[in-house]
Image (cartoon, rainbow, N blue to C red; front, side, top):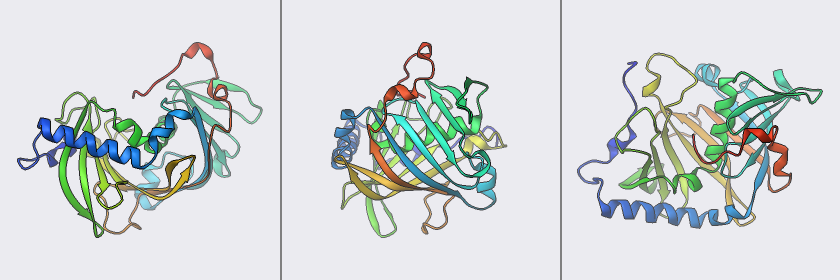
Length: 277
């Protein structure tokens, strides 16, 4: 189990091999969804923020939660296209505290506004970065070097075009994650994305074989961009029933450019990060 690794690229079978034609079709489909969702407008903005409620369910939720509490309210601030972000806890075990990343350097801000870079809290680092990546996922995946059409599939009565995105090689390996993007054939919007979890904070036996899926829903238009205000995460395969989720993030008060990007710069000497993992 320890040596097994999830391989989402296996859906590229003899009917949908890696060819120039399928590569072109995959890129065309992904770019089309990106444009439909208004993500060509994302470059007009520097930062964004939102309030949220996140809930983790059951025993798996207790084991896998990235926040101090299984259920709680938080606010987030992010700089577009980077891994610079902050979470502020509102209630619960760490009420009022702030944790953040600046170019992957982890810091915390205490109640008296004292700031310190410190030893990485693996769960919070994963949560802050993953929530940003999920929120910008379609914009980031369209720039992946490997984008391949993988045929059609059905989910909950809707038909989808599937596109595999990854880095380095299409075959599964430890350095890069694999993603399968589900583009609704009717709306041309991304409803689901399946993904591997190569950098897992849970080092349990067989963790390399773990993968998940996210459902994007309750889209609302903000400054010409369709923002999913509900993100529902499943363990392994996408579930037929939405209520069988691992955790669900509900977003409110999403705003672009409502704070200065310098607010996310704790130490200018740390440099500027980019779209890398």
